[in-house]
Image (tube, rainbow, N blue to C red; front, side, top):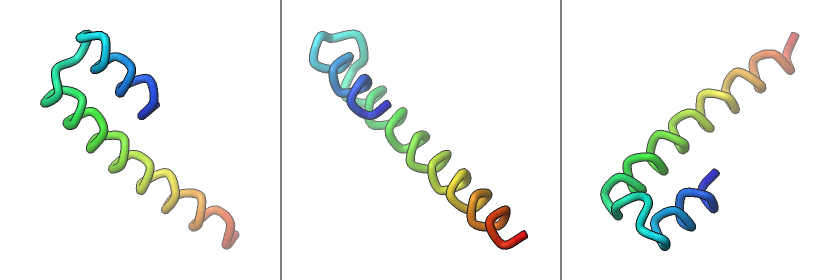
Length: 43
């Protein structure tokens, strides 16, 4: 998804600020999914 956001920023679909905010959201979601995966792996 980061690649798509960066491409979108490059062709002026997203502003730099919007792209940075989306990437931060993606990082947060990624951390949550990794935590979920880790907890399920222990079962």
